[in-house]
Length: 477
Picture 1 (tube, rainbow, N blue to C red):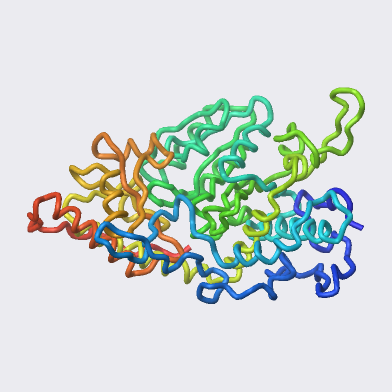
Picture 2 (cartoon, rainbow, N blue to C red):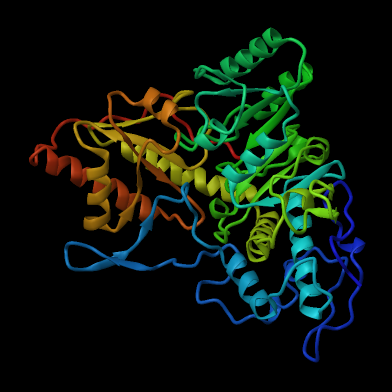
Protein backbone atom coordinates (compact mmCIF):
# COMPACT_ATOMS: atom_id res chain seq x y z
CA UNK A 1 0.00 0.00 0.00
CA UNK A 2 1.21 3.50 -0.88
CA UNK A 3 1.27 5.60 2.28
CA UNK A 4 2.89 9.01 2.71
CA UNK A 5 5.34 10.27 0.11
CA UNK A 6 6.38 7.65 -2.45
CA UNK A 7 10.03 6.68 -2.71
CA UNK A 8 12.12 8.90 -4.95
CA UNK A 9 15.48 8.84 -6.65
CA UNK A 10 17.02 12.28 -6.52
CA UNK A 11 13.55 13.78 -6.21
CA UNK A 12 12.21 12.33 -9.47
CA UNK A 13 9.96 9.36 -8.64
CA UNK A 14 9.97 6.53 -11.13
CA UNK A 15 6.67 4.87 -11.89
CA UNK A 16 7.98 1.40 -11.11
CA UNK A 17 8.97 2.58 -7.61
CA UNK A 18 5.29 2.84 -6.75
CA UNK A 19 3.36 -0.07 -5.36
CA UNK A 20 1.03 -1.84 -7.79
CA UNK A 21 -2.68 -1.55 -7.11
CA UNK A 22 -5.74 -3.69 -7.28
CA UNK A 23 -8.42 -2.54 -9.72
CA UNK A 24 -10.05 0.73 -8.61
CA UNK A 25 -13.61 -0.43 -9.18
CA UNK A 26 -15.76 -2.52 -11.44
CA UNK A 27 -15.21 -0.32 -14.49
CA UNK A 28 -11.64 0.80 -13.82
CA UNK A 29 -8.54 -0.97 -15.07
CA UNK A 30 -5.28 -1.12 -13.13
CA UNK A 31 -2.56 1.33 -14.09
CA UNK A 32 0.37 -0.13 -15.98
CA UNK A 33 3.24 0.98 -13.70
CA UNK A 34 5.77 1.01 -16.53
CA UNK A 35 3.83 3.11 -19.01
CA UNK A 36 4.87 6.64 -19.94
CA UNK A 37 2.02 7.39 -22.31
CA UNK A 38 -0.64 10.04 -21.84
CA UNK A 39 -2.91 7.25 -20.60
CA UNK A 40 -0.39 6.58 -17.82
CA UNK A 41 -0.75 10.13 -16.54
CA UNK A 42 -4.50 9.76 -16.31
CA UNK A 43 -5.58 6.13 -16.73
CA UNK A 44 -9.07 7.03 -17.94
CA UNK A 45 -7.86 9.38 -20.67
CA UNK A 46 -8.87 7.03 -23.45
CA UNK A 47 -12.49 6.93 -22.23
CA UNK A 48 -13.03 10.66 -21.80
CA UNK A 49 -15.69 12.36 -23.94
CA UNK A 50 -14.53 13.61 -27.34
CA UNK A 51 -13.29 17.19 -27.43
CA UNK A 52 -15.20 19.90 -29.23
CA UNK A 53 -12.03 21.07 -30.99
CA UNK A 54 -10.26 19.41 -33.89
CA UNK A 55 -8.49 16.13 -33.13
CA UNK A 56 -5.00 16.11 -31.71
CA UNK A 57 -3.58 16.63 -28.21
CA UNK A 58 -2.05 19.99 -29.19
CA UNK A 59 -5.26 21.37 -30.66
CA UNK A 60 -6.36 24.42 -28.67
CA UNK A 61 -9.64 25.00 -26.91
CA UNK A 62 -11.27 28.23 -27.99
CA UNK A 63 -10.10 28.05 -31.59
CA UNK A 64 -12.73 29.80 -33.67
CA UNK A 65 -14.27 31.70 -30.74
CA UNK A 66 -15.89 34.89 -31.98
CA UNK A 67 -15.81 38.25 -30.22
CA UNK A 68 -17.93 41.37 -30.78
CA UNK A 69 -16.57 44.46 -32.52
CA UNK A 70 -17.69 48.07 -32.65
CA UNK A 71 -18.74 47.48 -36.25
CA UNK A 72 -21.69 45.47 -34.94
CA UNK A 73 -20.40 42.11 -36.14
CA UNK A 74 -18.64 39.26 -34.39
CA UNK A 75 -15.34 38.04 -35.77
CA UNK A 76 -13.01 35.14 -34.92
CA UNK A 77 -10.65 36.19 -32.14
CA UNK A 78 -7.02 36.53 -33.22
CA UNK A 79 -4.94 35.87 -30.13
CA UNK A 80 -1.52 37.53 -30.22
CA UNK A 81 -1.08 37.55 -26.45
CA UNK A 82 0.12 33.96 -26.12
CA UNK A 83 3.36 35.01 -24.41
CA UNK A 84 1.32 36.21 -21.44
CA UNK A 85 -0.89 33.14 -21.12
CA UNK A 86 -1.37 30.46 -23.74
CA UNK A 87 -4.75 28.86 -24.52
CA UNK A 88 -5.52 25.44 -23.13
CA UNK A 89 -4.35 22.47 -25.17
CA UNK A 90 -6.72 19.58 -25.63
CA UNK A 91 -4.21 17.30 -23.90
CA UNK A 92 -4.42 19.37 -20.71
CA UNK A 93 -8.21 19.67 -20.73
CA UNK A 94 -8.74 15.99 -21.46
CA UNK A 95 -6.33 14.96 -18.71
CA UNK A 96 -8.09 17.16 -16.15
CA UNK A 97 -11.58 16.10 -17.21
CA UNK A 98 -10.61 12.44 -17.03
CA UNK A 99 -9.26 12.77 -13.50
CA UNK A 100 -11.96 15.01 -12.00
CA UNK A 101 -14.47 12.23 -11.19
CA UNK A 102 -11.75 10.49 -9.19
CA UNK A 103 -10.24 13.55 -7.50
CA UNK A 104 -9.03 12.89 -3.97
CA UNK A 105 -6.19 13.77 -1.61
CA UNK A 106 -2.60 13.13 -2.67
CA UNK A 107 -0.05 11.22 -0.52
CA UNK A 108 -2.19 11.02 2.61
CA UNK A 109 -5.02 8.62 1.92
CA UNK A 110 -5.30 4.84 1.91
CA UNK A 111 -8.49 4.85 -0.15
CA UNK A 112 -8.56 3.74 -3.77
CA UNK A 113 -9.16 7.24 -5.16
CA UNK A 114 -6.40 8.77 -3.08
CA UNK A 115 -4.04 6.05 -4.25
CA UNK A 116 -5.02 6.69 -7.84
CA UNK A 117 -4.47 10.44 -7.51
CA UNK A 118 -1.13 9.95 -5.77
CA UNK A 119 0.02 7.78 -8.64
CA UNK A 120 -1.20 10.34 -11.20
CA UNK A 121 0.62 13.14 -9.36
CA UNK A 122 3.93 11.31 -9.16
CA UNK A 123 3.65 10.10 -12.74
CA UNK A 124 3.16 13.75 -13.73
CA UNK A 125 6.38 14.61 -11.90
CA UNK A 126 8.21 11.89 -13.81
CA UNK A 127 6.85 13.00 -17.19
CA UNK A 128 7.82 16.64 -16.57
CA UNK A 129 11.26 15.52 -15.40
CA UNK A 130 11.70 13.44 -18.56
CA UNK A 131 10.53 16.40 -20.69
CA UNK A 132 13.26 18.55 -19.12
CA UNK A 133 15.96 15.88 -19.34
CA UNK A 134 16.30 15.47 -15.58
CA UNK A 135 18.32 12.66 -14.04
CA UNK A 136 18.73 11.06 -10.60
CA UNK A 137 20.62 14.10 -9.31
CA UNK A 138 17.66 16.40 -9.99
CA UNK A 139 14.49 17.25 -8.09
CA UNK A 140 11.27 18.29 -9.81
CA UNK A 141 9.25 20.56 -7.52
CA UNK A 142 5.77 21.69 -8.51
CA UNK A 143 5.10 25.38 -7.85
CA UNK A 144 2.44 27.89 -8.85
CA UNK A 145 4.33 29.45 -11.76
CA UNK A 146 7.76 30.71 -12.86
CA UNK A 147 7.78 33.55 -10.35
CA UNK A 148 7.02 31.17 -7.51
CA UNK A 149 9.68 28.73 -8.71
CA UNK A 150 12.34 31.44 -8.93
CA UNK A 151 11.50 32.69 -5.46
CA UNK A 152 11.77 29.13 -4.14
CA UNK A 153 15.25 28.80 -5.62
CA UNK A 154 16.21 32.22 -4.23
CA UNK A 155 15.19 31.03 -0.74
CA UNK A 156 17.25 27.85 -1.21
CA UNK A 157 20.52 29.56 -2.07
CA UNK A 158 23.35 28.81 0.37
CA UNK A 159 24.14 31.78 2.63
CA UNK A 160 26.42 34.28 0.94
CA UNK A 161 25.56 33.23 -2.61
CA UNK A 162 26.06 35.94 -5.24
CA UNK A 163 23.64 35.94 -8.17
CA UNK A 164 24.77 37.30 -11.53
CA UNK A 165 22.03 38.31 -13.94
CA UNK A 166 21.30 40.83 -16.69
CA UNK A 167 19.14 43.94 -16.67
CA UNK A 168 17.18 42.44 -19.55
CA UNK A 169 15.46 39.78 -17.47
CA UNK A 170 11.76 39.48 -16.76
CA UNK A 171 10.99 40.76 -13.26
CA UNK A 172 10.50 37.15 -12.14
CA UNK A 173 14.20 36.56 -12.82
CA UNK A 174 15.32 40.01 -11.71
CA UNK A 175 13.67 40.81 -8.39
CA UNK A 176 13.81 37.63 -6.24
CA UNK A 177 17.60 37.40 -6.01
CA UNK A 178 19.42 38.68 -2.92
CA UNK A 179 22.94 40.05 -3.35
CA UNK A 180 22.55 40.28 -7.11
CA UNK A 181 25.10 41.62 -9.57
CA UNK A 182 23.04 43.11 -12.39
CA UNK A 183 25.02 43.26 -15.61
CA UNK A 184 24.27 45.92 -18.25
CA UNK A 185 22.41 44.95 -21.39
CA UNK A 186 24.69 43.35 -23.98
CA UNK A 187 24.42 44.17 -27.67
CA UNK A 188 24.89 40.57 -28.75
CA UNK A 189 25.43 37.00 -27.58
CA UNK A 190 29.21 37.31 -27.58
CA UNK A 191 28.99 40.41 -25.40
CA UNK A 192 26.72 38.56 -22.98
CA UNK A 193 29.18 35.70 -22.63
CA UNK A 194 32.10 38.11 -22.19
CA UNK A 195 30.21 40.07 -19.53
CA UNK A 196 29.53 36.95 -17.46
CA UNK A 197 33.14 35.85 -17.86
CA UNK A 198 34.41 39.20 -16.61
CA UNK A 199 31.91 39.33 -13.73
CA UNK A 200 32.77 35.87 -12.48
CA UNK A 201 36.49 36.54 -12.78
CA UNK A 202 36.04 39.64 -10.64
CA UNK A 203 34.01 37.90 -7.94
CA UNK A 204 36.68 35.39 -7.04
CA UNK A 205 35.94 32.60 -4.56
CA UNK A 206 32.44 32.04 -3.22
CA UNK A 207 29.15 30.46 -4.21
CA UNK A 208 27.70 32.00 -7.36
CA UNK A 209 24.58 31.49 -9.46
CA UNK A 210 24.14 32.87 -12.98
CA UNK A 211 20.44 33.46 -13.74
CA UNK A 212 19.51 33.95 -17.40
CA UNK A 213 16.50 33.73 -19.66
CA UNK A 214 16.30 31.32 -22.56
CA UNK A 215 14.17 33.62 -24.73
CA UNK A 216 13.29 37.24 -24.07
CA UNK A 217 9.64 37.91 -23.31
CA UNK A 218 10.05 41.33 -24.94
CA UNK A 219 11.90 40.58 -28.18
CA UNK A 220 11.73 36.79 -28.38
CA UNK A 221 15.47 36.71 -28.96
CA UNK A 222 17.28 33.53 -27.95
CA UNK A 223 20.07 33.88 -25.41
CA UNK A 224 23.32 31.87 -25.63
CA UNK A 225 22.43 29.58 -22.74
CA UNK A 226 24.87 26.79 -23.50
CA UNK A 227 27.81 29.19 -23.89
CA UNK A 228 26.91 31.04 -20.70
CA UNK A 229 26.72 27.75 -18.82
CA UNK A 230 30.14 26.74 -20.11
CA UNK A 231 31.68 29.97 -18.79
CA UNK A 232 29.82 29.75 -15.48
CA UNK A 233 30.92 26.19 -14.80
CA UNK A 234 34.50 27.08 -15.61
CA UNK A 235 34.39 29.32 -12.52
CA UNK A 236 32.46 26.80 -10.42
CA UNK A 237 29.21 28.78 -10.67
CA UNK A 238 25.79 27.27 -11.22
CA UNK A 239 23.22 28.33 -13.82
CA UNK A 240 19.47 28.88 -13.45
CA UNK A 241 17.48 29.05 -16.69
CA UNK A 242 14.21 30.95 -16.96
CA UNK A 243 12.47 28.84 -19.61
CA UNK A 244 9.04 30.46 -19.26
CA UNK A 245 9.11 31.73 -22.86
CA UNK A 246 11.43 29.11 -24.30
CA UNK A 247 9.76 25.83 -23.37
CA UNK A 248 6.67 26.30 -25.54
CA UNK A 249 8.79 26.97 -28.62
CA UNK A 250 11.98 24.91 -28.32
CA UNK A 251 13.05 21.75 -26.46
CA UNK A 252 14.54 22.44 -23.02
CA UNK A 253 16.94 19.79 -21.76
CA UNK A 254 18.98 20.54 -18.65
CA UNK A 255 21.69 18.08 -19.65
CA UNK A 256 22.09 19.30 -23.22
CA UNK A 257 22.04 22.95 -22.17
CA UNK A 258 24.26 22.10 -19.18
CA UNK A 259 22.21 24.18 -16.75
CA UNK A 260 21.70 23.36 -13.08
CA UNK A 261 18.15 24.64 -12.59
CA UNK A 262 15.21 25.45 -14.83
CA UNK A 263 11.91 27.19 -14.07
CA UNK A 264 8.76 27.40 -16.17
CA UNK A 265 5.00 27.98 -16.02
CA UNK A 266 2.16 25.74 -17.12
CA UNK A 267 0.03 28.69 -18.18
CA UNK A 268 2.58 29.61 -20.84
CA UNK A 269 2.83 25.97 -21.95
CA UNK A 270 -0.84 25.44 -22.87
CA UNK A 271 -1.70 24.04 -19.43
CA UNK A 272 -3.40 26.95 -17.62
CA UNK A 273 -4.25 25.16 -14.39
CA UNK A 274 -1.99 26.97 -11.93
CA UNK A 275 1.14 24.81 -11.91
CA UNK A 276 4.78 25.70 -12.48
CA UNK A 277 8.04 23.85 -12.01
CA UNK A 278 11.46 24.23 -10.46
CA UNK A 279 13.71 21.41 -11.61
CA UNK A 280 17.36 21.10 -10.73
CA UNK A 281 20.12 19.77 -8.54
CA UNK A 282 18.95 18.34 -5.24
CA UNK A 283 21.69 19.40 -2.84
CA UNK A 284 20.78 23.06 -2.39
CA UNK A 285 17.08 22.24 -2.22
CA UNK A 286 17.55 19.46 0.34
CA UNK A 287 19.77 21.64 2.54
CA UNK A 288 17.48 24.69 2.48
CA UNK A 289 14.65 25.40 4.94
CA UNK A 290 11.28 24.43 3.49
CA UNK A 291 9.81 27.04 1.18
CA UNK A 292 6.46 26.46 2.89
CA UNK A 293 6.04 24.93 6.34
CA UNK A 294 3.15 22.59 6.94
CA UNK A 295 1.70 19.16 6.40
CA UNK A 296 3.32 16.93 3.83
CA UNK A 297 6.77 18.50 4.20
CA UNK A 298 7.49 16.82 7.55
CA UNK A 299 8.85 13.44 8.55
CA UNK A 300 8.21 14.04 12.25
CA UNK A 301 6.70 16.74 14.43
CA UNK A 302 7.39 16.44 18.15
CA UNK A 303 5.61 17.91 21.14
CA UNK A 304 8.14 20.68 21.70
CA UNK A 305 8.27 23.76 19.47
CA UNK A 306 10.95 23.35 16.85
CA UNK A 307 11.06 19.56 17.16
CA UNK A 308 10.57 18.98 13.42
CA UNK A 309 12.31 16.78 10.90
CA UNK A 310 11.69 17.68 7.28
CA UNK A 311 11.55 15.52 4.20
CA UNK A 312 14.19 15.76 1.52
CA UNK A 313 13.25 15.78 -2.15
CA UNK A 314 10.30 17.66 -3.65
CA UNK A 315 8.04 17.07 -0.63
CA UNK A 316 10.26 19.38 1.44
CA UNK A 317 9.02 22.37 -0.57
CA UNK A 318 5.47 21.22 -1.40
CA UNK A 319 3.70 21.59 1.94
CA UNK A 320 -0.07 21.47 1.90
CA UNK A 321 -2.40 19.82 -0.56
CA UNK A 322 -0.68 19.99 -3.96
CA UNK A 323 -2.19 21.20 -7.21
CA UNK A 324 -2.88 17.76 -8.62
CA UNK A 325 -4.88 18.97 -11.61
CA UNK A 326 -2.25 21.55 -12.54
CA UNK A 327 0.53 18.96 -12.39
CA UNK A 328 -1.42 16.44 -14.45
CA UNK A 329 -2.38 19.07 -17.05
CA UNK A 330 1.22 20.26 -17.38
CA UNK A 331 2.51 16.70 -17.73
CA UNK A 332 -0.06 15.92 -20.41
CA UNK A 333 1.13 18.85 -22.53
CA UNK A 334 4.77 17.92 -21.94
CA UNK A 335 4.02 14.39 -23.16
CA UNK A 336 2.16 15.74 -26.20
CA UNK A 337 5.05 18.03 -27.11
CA UNK A 338 7.52 15.18 -26.62
CA UNK A 339 5.52 13.13 -29.11
CA UNK A 340 5.27 15.98 -31.62
CA UNK A 341 7.74 16.96 -34.32
CA UNK A 342 9.30 19.95 -32.54
CA UNK A 343 11.40 20.87 -35.59
CA UNK A 344 8.29 21.07 -37.74
CA UNK A 345 6.48 23.17 -35.14
CA UNK A 346 9.44 25.54 -34.92
CA UNK A 347 9.71 25.81 -38.70
CA UNK A 348 6.01 26.66 -38.96
CA UNK A 349 6.35 29.31 -36.28
CA UNK A 350 9.44 30.78 -37.96
CA UNK A 351 7.51 31.11 -41.21
CA UNK A 352 4.64 32.93 -39.47
CA UNK A 353 7.09 35.12 -37.56
CA UNK A 354 8.92 36.11 -40.73
CA UNK A 355 5.59 36.91 -42.39
CA UNK A 356 4.58 39.13 -39.48
CA UNK A 357 7.91 40.94 -39.23
CA UNK A 358 8.03 41.64 -42.95
CA UNK A 359 4.45 42.89 -42.80
CA UNK A 360 5.29 45.24 -39.93
CA UNK A 361 8.38 46.47 -41.75
CA UNK A 362 6.19 47.49 -44.67
CA UNK A 363 4.02 49.81 -42.54
CA UNK A 364 5.38 53.36 -42.27
CA UNK A 365 5.95 54.49 -38.70
CA UNK A 366 6.23 51.06 -37.08
CA UNK A 367 9.53 50.27 -35.38
CA UNK A 368 10.33 46.80 -34.07
CA UNK A 369 12.36 46.42 -30.89
CA UNK A 370 15.49 44.32 -30.80
CA UNK A 371 18.47 43.93 -28.49
CA UNK A 372 20.71 41.65 -30.55
CA UNK A 373 19.72 42.93 -34.00
CA UNK A 374 16.94 42.14 -36.50
CA UNK A 375 18.52 38.94 -37.80
CA UNK A 376 19.16 37.25 -34.47
CA UNK A 377 17.20 33.98 -33.97
CA UNK A 378 14.10 34.32 -31.85
CA UNK A 379 10.86 32.65 -30.86
CA UNK A 380 7.48 33.96 -31.96
CA UNK A 381 7.46 37.30 -30.13
CA UNK A 382 7.59 40.78 -31.71
CA UNK A 383 7.45 44.04 -29.77
CA UNK A 384 7.05 47.31 -31.62
CA UNK A 385 5.93 50.92 -31.41
CA UNK A 386 3.76 52.99 -33.75
CA UNK A 387 5.24 56.44 -34.22
CA UNK A 388 3.14 59.15 -32.62
CA UNK A 389 0.52 56.77 -31.23
CA UNK A 390 -0.12 55.61 -27.69
CA UNK A 391 0.35 51.87 -27.43
CA UNK A 392 -2.64 51.38 -25.12
CA UNK A 393 -4.87 53.22 -27.59
CA UNK A 394 -3.64 51.13 -30.49
CA UNK A 395 -4.16 47.91 -28.52
CA UNK A 396 -7.69 48.94 -27.58
CA UNK A 397 -8.48 49.82 -31.19
CA UNK A 398 -7.20 46.46 -32.44
CA UNK A 399 -9.48 44.75 -29.95
CA UNK A 400 -12.70 46.72 -30.31
CA UNK A 401 -12.48 47.30 -34.07
CA UNK A 402 -10.83 44.12 -35.31
CA UNK A 403 -11.14 41.43 -32.62
CA UNK A 404 -7.38 41.17 -32.25
CA UNK A 405 -5.67 40.75 -28.88
CA UNK A 406 -2.16 42.11 -28.35
CA UNK A 407 -0.30 43.20 -25.23
CA UNK A 408 0.74 46.78 -24.45
CA UNK A 409 2.98 48.11 -21.70
CA UNK A 410 6.49 47.35 -20.49
CA UNK A 411 5.87 43.58 -20.23
CA UNK A 412 7.17 43.04 -16.67
CA UNK A 413 10.66 43.76 -18.02
CA UNK A 414 10.81 47.48 -17.42
CA UNK A 415 14.58 48.07 -17.66
CA UNK A 416 14.87 46.19 -20.96
CA UNK A 417 11.77 47.68 -22.59
CA UNK A 418 12.67 51.23 -21.57
CA UNK A 419 16.15 50.69 -23.00
CA UNK A 420 14.74 49.55 -26.35
CA UNK A 421 12.05 52.20 -26.74
CA UNK A 422 12.94 55.06 -29.11
CA UNK A 423 11.10 57.50 -26.83
CA UNK A 424 9.39 57.55 -23.47
CA UNK A 425 6.22 55.49 -23.34
CA UNK A 426 5.23 51.87 -23.82
CA UNK A 427 5.24 49.28 -26.58
CA UNK A 428 2.98 46.74 -28.23
CA UNK A 429 3.73 43.03 -28.29
CA UNK A 430 2.41 40.37 -30.66
CA UNK A 431 3.21 36.77 -29.76
CA UNK A 432 2.57 33.63 -31.76
CA UNK A 433 1.62 30.15 -30.66
CA UNK A 434 0.35 26.80 -31.79
CA UNK A 435 -3.00 28.26 -32.84
CA UNK A 436 -1.67 31.19 -34.88
CA UNK A 437 -2.51 31.11 -38.60
CA UNK A 438 -1.44 33.07 -41.67
CA UNK A 439 -4.95 34.57 -41.66
CA UNK A 440 -4.36 35.88 -38.14
CA UNK A 441 -1.04 37.43 -39.15
CA UNK A 442 -2.51 39.06 -42.23
CA UNK A 443 -5.42 40.44 -40.19
CA UNK A 444 -3.03 42.04 -37.71
CA UNK A 445 -0.88 43.60 -40.43
CA UNK A 446 -3.98 44.87 -42.23
CA UNK A 447 -5.47 46.31 -39.03
CA UNK A 448 -2.24 48.12 -38.15
CA UNK A 449 -1.99 49.47 -41.69
CA UNK A 450 -5.52 50.84 -41.34
CA UNK A 451 -4.69 52.32 -37.94
CA UNK A 452 -1.69 54.19 -39.33
CA UNK A 453 -3.70 55.48 -42.31
CA UNK A 454 -6.56 56.66 -40.13
CA UNK A 455 -4.19 58.48 -37.80
CA UNK A 456 -2.48 60.07 -40.79
CA UNK A 457 -5.83 61.33 -42.07
CA UNK A 458 -5.78 59.03 -45.05
CA UNK A 459 -2.33 60.15 -46.10
CA UNK A 460 -0.79 56.73 -46.36
CA UNK A 461 1.05 57.27 -49.61
CA UNK A 462 4.49 57.39 -48.04
CA UNK A 463 6.74 54.67 -49.37
CA UNK A 464 6.68 51.68 -47.05
CA UNK A 465 9.88 50.54 -45.45
CA UNK A 466 11.33 47.42 -46.96
CA UNK A 467 12.34 44.36 -45.02
CA UNK A 468 15.48 44.95 -43.00
CA UNK A 469 18.60 44.17 -45.05
CA UNK A 470 19.75 40.61 -44.72
CA UNK A 471 16.66 39.37 -42.88
CA UNK A 472 16.27 35.66 -43.20
CA UNK A 473 13.99 32.96 -41.94
CA UNK A 474 14.70 31.78 -38.41
CA UNK A 475 16.71 28.58 -37.99
CA UNK A 476 14.95 25.62 -36.44
CA UNK A 477 15.86 24.58 -32.90
